[in-house]
Structures are given as structure tokens and as C-alpha cells.
Length: 476
Image (cartoon, rainbow, N blue to C red):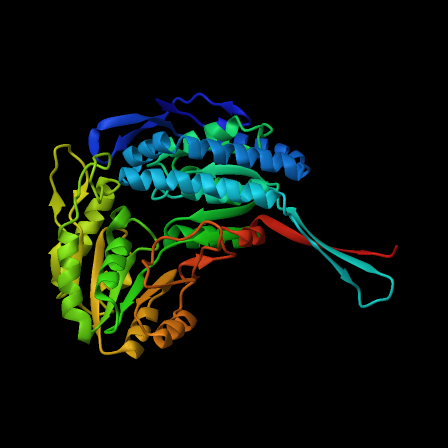
């Protein structure tokens, strides 16, 4: 199949493409994805710029109808599209189907929000004057999305952008063109005017700077690596452009002596190794107090080693492959570095399966300290480290001792410690007796410090990014 770019309501022909490879079976080529150059990107920018005023003037009912149509089709086709997602990115099939369902729910949520667009009417401090505060769309928004959630993250950017009346240019990651193409194909039949939604696939280093720097693009929402995010923030600052960044995480899961061991092990297993650990919210640092440390490490290692690793489409597989060879080699190198720095490694080797793919055993690295590279740098794979601490106070200090601040968790039966941790963990999202990964679609998503920049994504808080506020004064 050819995955083509979609610009101004038309699917464009391309002379350059790249194969879409199944990480569970590299002999399986899903199709070929277009590689846009600057010329096609400029066409998309112009199309979105021309379409933006018309969509900004659309009614709440028009926006509801579009978003509800997309959400309904995603939910109806979740098994089919979930299989595509798992085949393309490497998530297990249940995870792939679940992600598509979440994307559908996101569109449904913002369909409802389109009917609840609200402002404020206030009394002025001056007699006889009325004050109205309203929100209005910002115009053309560039959306740059990663490979690890290839349909959910585009959904949680596109849906609010359209809900609040903006035109969109989607630049997805090169590794996952199939999901982006499928989502845009549904949008192309949703009743949107031509040019409101555009898909431009291609090498980020070639077309990314043009998207960020164009004067016609009024805002950029980016999810990806810290270095790229910082570069985008600098460029947007130079052009006085609105920017929203979701970047890395080095998320702590604190396990206290009083924790329910079974709950702590399952929460840590899920957070660290499900989705092959390829989540910015993954529990990559397990901060464990000394009274429960040995029992926790033994129990978690046993559960980890029992995980079935294999082809993402096979029944019973609990962890699929790493997304590609480059990411696999990076993961393996971090395991090697941890061992050389004194960590005790269980698992973490490359695996062979019936089909040639990028398989890796999950890795647990114990006997580490917070200064080791395994605890300071984001691995983005099925690798978790254990840091032994004396008590809650040290656990909190270690949990906060990081340049990141996306998600943090604690396993405890102490209401006192749970309440204190929720208030004092330096993270945008805090979980108690739950995995650090796994969030709802109707509440804000985002972090602190080096993990996030700008206003929150998802839920009603998405309006802060996708709209601007106007204050109007009237003397009747």
C-alpha cells in the first residue's frame, strides 16, 4: 500500500518513499510512505492558511458532527486499525486495539466540548459597562507526533485543534505512517472543508524547520525527544510563536515498606515493561525502601522473567518487539553501561523468535544509585532500575532528583505518606498504588521541569493552547 500525503483535500502523488517495516517480522513490509519535500509542505501550509478562516467561523454543530463521525468510525474499526497499529509499531494486539479505542474516545470527548464552548460575562468596575471574555482559534497549528502512540497522540492533538476552530498540519513520525494515513483518511470523509486537515510525511530534519518557522503557522504542538523539543522551543521563541512540548521522563515508582507487595509488583511490572517500555510515562526508576527491597526485587524479577515476549500479533504475547534496530541497540547499550557501572542486571539480552524482529528480554537492574546513567538518562525501552533507600524521606528526595518531572508513583498503605507524596512529588501526574503509565483522556496530561513546556494537553485544559482569549468592553 502507498501512504500518500494529504494536502488541500487531495491525496498527492510522490516520487520518493520509504518502506514501512513490521518490527515483529522485518520481512513484512506494510507499504511505502511518501517523503514530502519543502514544496509539498509549503502547499500544505498555504492550504491550511486559506481554510482556517472558514473553519474558525464554523458552528458548534458542524464541529460536533465532524469529531463525532471520526470517533464513531475509530471505535467501530478498532479491531482492524488496532491490528495495523500493532503490526506497524510493535505493541501487542490488545494494546493496539486499546489505543485505537482511546483515540475514538478522544474524538468523542471533543465532539462534546465543541457544544460547550463558553466564555464569561463580567460586570466592569466602571458603571454601565459590560465585559465579555471569549475564546477564539489561533489559526494554523503544526502538530509533530512520535512513533510510540501512533494514533492516540495525533488524536489528542487533532481533536482539540478542530474542536476550537483551527486548521491543522500533521507531521507524524517516519516509523508509523500507516496509522497517520488511516486517521487522516477517516478525517477526509468527515465533512471537513478542504485544507482544514493536512498530512505531510517526511524527514523531520528536512521539513520540520520550515513548519516551525513559517509565519503562516501560528502554533506548534510537539511530542518527542528533549533535544528536538528544545530546538523547537528556541525557534518558536525567535518567531514569537505559541509552542507546546511533551518530551522525556525518568519516572520514579516509590515502594515503601508498608506497601502491598502484590500491588507494588504488578504496578511496577505494568509501568516498566508493558508497551515494551516505550512510554514517556514508564516506571524507569523503582525507588524501594530497604525493609521491602529484597522481597520486591525477587518478586518483580520472577514476574518479569515470566513475561511472554514475541510477535505482537500472536495470542498470549505480553510484550512485543522494540520499534526498530536503532532503538534496540540503544536499549542494549544502556544495559551494558549499567552493568559496567556496578548494576546487577537480570534479563536485557537480544532474543530470537520464529520471525526476525527487534526482540529484547525485559531488563531489571538492581544495586544502582541515582547518579548512574541508567537513572539519569531516558532509555525508552523495557529497562527498569532499582534504587535502595532508607525511608520515605530519602525516597521522596531521590524521586525528585531528576531533570524530568512527567509522572511519579508511590505504593503504600499509609494515607499520610500518600497524601504527602501527592503534594510534594515534582511531577505533573502522580499515581498512588497504580502504574505511572496509563492516564485518562478527559483530564490534563503533562509534566514539570524538563518533561513538558507550555499548557497541558487533553481534557478541557486543551483550550489553553488551541485558543486565545479576547476581552471586549461595551457601553450599551
